[in-house]
Image (cartoon, rainbow, N blue to C red; front, side, top):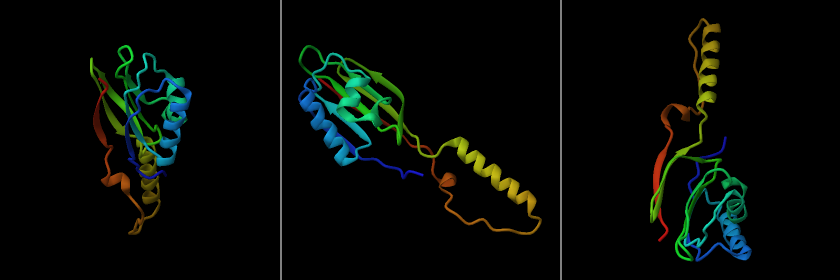
Length: 152
């Protein structure tokens, strides 16, 4: 299982229009192993999956939200590594974008299967028994956090 990870990279990129700038951003995202990226000053009037992959890498391809630039000013991109987070709700306004994130760590279905497996084992052992292990599923809940990013 992947450990919970929150490495936050916030940067005024002063434009993502050029391929060279997108490469610099992508290299930094990879070097820092960032899991949440907030980029201001994208100066882009179109941001799509291709731009996100080129700028940040494949890990961010599906989980991003953006505020488009007005002319050559502003613009913002908020993206999360889908291995760790998903965007469950977002709000794009005139000068800001907000997103509520949820941790993708700890698949609920896997937790239920694990507990069902324990029940089957328990039912097959008539004596007292002891279970030893790392039971993070019991005390850790899904994390939700809301981020607001301005792009004006």
